[in-house]
Every structure is written in C-alpha cells, then in structure tokens.
Image (cartoon, rainbow, N blue to C red; front, side):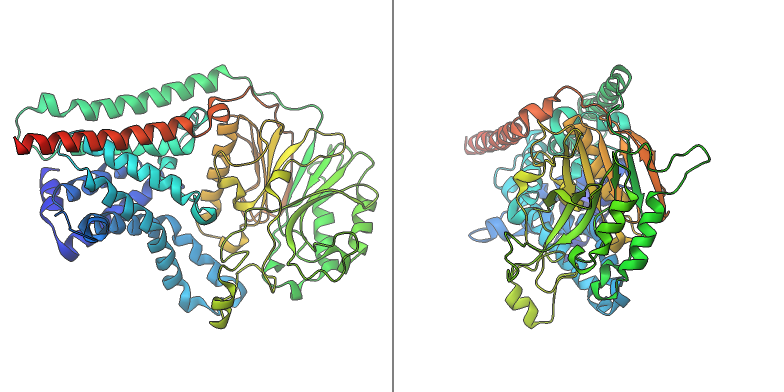
Length: 538
C-alpha cells in the first residue's frame, strides 16, 4: 500500500489520469449488482493520495487544473462501469445505430464525471495533510452526488451510497439517513486507508485506529440492521390481493408493429391463468397489475380491448395497466401535445376510473432535450413517439383505487429519486411499474430493482414492482423480497402488500441531516486549511 500511495502522489500527466481511471473503474464494482465493497477501500485512497501530490493551479486552473482532472478521471472510470449497461438499448430495433453505442456511453459517463471533477477541485482548494482532508473530499463528493441527483432533472443511478447496501442488514440504515447519507458515510469510511499509508513502519499504533474505526462502523451498521429486521413485524394487508403479470412484451420498440389482438390474448391468458389445481384464477384477486408499456398502443385505436378486459374482470377486481395516453381534455381532439406515459385503473365496466401520468421523464429516452438541434442530426429519443412524451403532474402520484388503500404510483426510473417520491405520508404502499426490456440480459434491471428496494426501506412501505421482462417482485417495508418471478419468465405472481410501518426517521427529516453534515465537512476543511497556512507563515 505504501508503494501504491507513493505512486499515486508522484504520478503526473497521462500516467496519473490512467491510474485514476482504473481506480474509478474498480470503485464501480462496489455498487449493485456487484457489491464488491473491499475494492472501494482500495480505490478511494488513490484519489486522496493523488490530490496530496497534485500541483495547485492558478487562475482558471484552480477549478479546471490537475485536481479537476484527477476527480474527472476517477468519475469517468466509475461511471463507465456503473452505466455500461445503458448501451444495451442500442441493440433494440435491429441495432441500426449500434456504431454509436460506445461513444454515447462514454459521453454520458464523461458528462456525469464532471460533477466529481468539480468536487475534487473544490476539495483541493482547502486541502490539508491531516485527517480533515478525507472529510473535505467526502463532503464535496457527497454534495456532487446530491447535485447529480437533482440538477437538470437528475440522474441518480448508482449513487456511491449503494455500496453500503449489499445485504438486507446493511440496507436498514437507509431508514435513518437515506441513500445520500449512506454516500457520505461510504466515502468517509473508504478513504480511511489514506490515513494509514504511506507509512515508514513506525507509529503503527497511531495509524491503524482510523481503519479499525471504519470496520467498527460497518459492524455497527450490520448490528443495527439485524436488530431492526429481528425486532420489526411486517404484516400483510387483508384488504388487497394482487396479481402481477410479467408478459414479456417486446413490441414497445415499434408501435406500428403491434398486433393488439394477439397482445391482448397473451395478457388475458396470463391474467386468468391457474397456478395450481386449487387456484381460483381472478376469483380472489382485487387488483390485477400489468407493467409499463404492457399495451403499447392507444386504447382508443382498439376499443375492443376495454370490452375484453371488462369481460375478464370479476366484479370485485380492478386492472392497473401501463399505457400511452393522449392528452384529450374535454373533447379537445385536435390537441397536438405529445402523449403521456401513463398508468390507468380500469373497472369491470371497462371504464378508466383513475390515472397517473409519468412526471419524471428520461432525457433522450422519453424526451429529447434541445430537440430541434438533435433532430437535424437524425437523433431521436429511444422510446417511440414522434414528438416524445409529455410530463405529468408529480403531485398526482397518489392513485385512488376503488375500495383499496392508495398506492404511490411510480413509473420506471421515478423510483430512483430518494426523498422525492411524492405524497408518501398518505400512501400505504409503493407501486412501481416498469419496462426494462430495453436493457435485457444486462445488469441494468438488477441495478434498477435494487434501487427500488431501498426506497421501500427509506419510506417504511412495502414495494410492489411489476416489470415487463423482470424483475417482478414484492417486498415488505424492510426491503425483503417476499415473492418474485424469475427474469425472462412469462408468468403471473399473486401477492399481498404489507401494512405500512410507523414513519421512519428518514421519512420525517429527509435530507436535512445529510446536508448539514456536508456543510460541516466543507467548513471543517476550510478551517483546517487556514490553520495550516498560518503555521507555514509562522
């Protein structure tokens, strides 16, 4: 480790950039679905040591000099590993733009890495050579993670705090500090080896305590999680029985190729199938759920669909389905507004009795930023729809269902936004419908599913996740999976959501403790830096 520390401090130019790029790629293995946590303790100190040896720039190079380059290189490596699965979308629709995949993934990773580059530069402005330097860098980097989850609609995939959620026991701390708090903690713990090395073999009794303290904190996290899991009773609801359908619909890639009759046939068959001889089909089901894009056509273009659904549903049942919806309001048939990516509730009369329109759209996936410019280059959004999709109202995520507790409906990646899900106080459980078929046979669906489980822990609500091609499952309010379907399995799953727990600490205080801790860490860095300069002056 001493050799590695000295190499990081003394490297410059492209050698340092390459070293940090590799270190960042290793750090990317610490988050879902890999969860190789020890590599984070190897990779993060390299960043600290590199900043120890980084020359301080002048003028514009104060922000965009060596310290920025160090953070950018580390972040680029991290996000290339964490986000590489996004390239799977280029195989959809025949892969005709497959040539662009490596450039697009590298460009996205580089764009997100700018946050880490700026965090590195800001930390270096108040750099010291004591223990406060890891607090400073952790605080700035945690702030950068918060920023990338919120700036320009946010993109909070694989926040580094997910590295501390590899087991059910570790996940429970999210109920107190959330994933952003876990990010600050993960960074601070993983940088502690920088306080031990480089070493000359003397004073080991002074150097090792920070590392032991980091291990103790992780042990305490596990202990807290074990205690919460063993001491909390999760009770299934008696007023709801749900059937989740995983239909393997791939026609979403081209609305024009959809055969509505065949697709409805498949969905109805799966919905009313008997799991075993004692299964009553839909006779005991109160809510049937089809995933996002399960009907990749406008219902008014095939009115028989609603009639067939109505004939299938027993008197007590309601269908919840992901569909595109035209924004017709009060008969405005000429409305040229792009459609909504919606979830609708359909009763036994074939009437739509409730709906939710996805509010948080995916940039370049469901809408095209700077559309005029990109369309001139022949670039469109991946999800079909000539003019993209319209965003809905995020305040309407609470869906009122006939004779049922209200779920908080989140479509696809809306589940990623920790602390920004909607009216969690009134909601009784989380319903996440998604279509991850774009990223089939990649790590993307597993990564997305794990992020969703952590929202259940943060909010103390059970999660019902219905995915087109997988992973379809239900969890209790502690994030434990209670029933699931295998990826790629065309089947249905019967579940009951769980009763909501008392409000978690995180659901009460949200991000305020995290933000205060980040601010304290940044201020501590400036204070330590000023004291260091005064000693040098004396």
